[in-house]
Image (cartoon, rainbow, N blue to C red; front, side, top):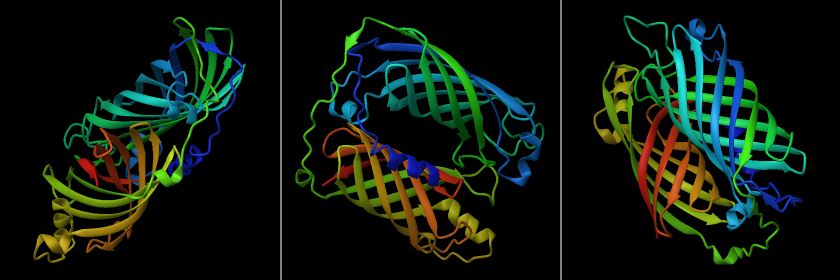
Length: 362
């Protein structure tokens, strides 16, 4: 999470690099082959992390042309959809992921390109944990999971339509504690690939001036509410609903960057179960309520925002996960008032639940 936080801040300052080419093919299809391993981030995962793995990906991509301000700010990014497939081992089986993504250029010239790609979607694991038939898979307890991928992509032009790619990638499968176990599957890989660009060439609009007056973007107060579903480590196959209420004061400092200060209230049935398992007496739901405060940063892509919050608990009876928490997700604004969001709450590398909710800006 720390490394991702630095990456989000980095892209606030990625400059617009002048393009010598005035026209490009608008669409791309490509394929990647990847090779890596499953990170052993828990002693109990020894059985499922011994082998190296191979994976492949196919994708379709659309180039932006700079017609919108946010495209100019991010140096003419690309967006697309990709399908990922890998064979892990006999315990986990095969993994698949289908996800949309955005790819942001860092270096973009006539011959060489360097992009950073972020994507999230749905994943499928063929052999999830089973207490009788597959008890050694302590990484994942459900077939359907969240799928996250980060990729640093370097590529060279072979000709007008074809590029040769090399990349470093990180892939993650998790069910966000919807079912235990949920240690997650983390996969670093290196890879190579080819793409093909097609479609009638279109003109780029580059270096267009963007008017942004900071005083026209005052501090705004937003109220958000949501829910999540998770399991407790103290019980088996029992689902708990968590409620979340947040109040945030936010200001758009640049066309890319929004900073905020946020107060959160969390109420979790699973947390009550965890406290009772530790021998703590819980007389009411209010005793298990957690209250926190934190700073947030939102990387804005037109109406879509990539949101990150680092928070500290002001009130929490449950101390097993420490005094800090992190929330990472997406916020989509329908207009200047109404929004919806999907946010993952974590403690270090341990996911607590995924929050689905709505928000209103006053």
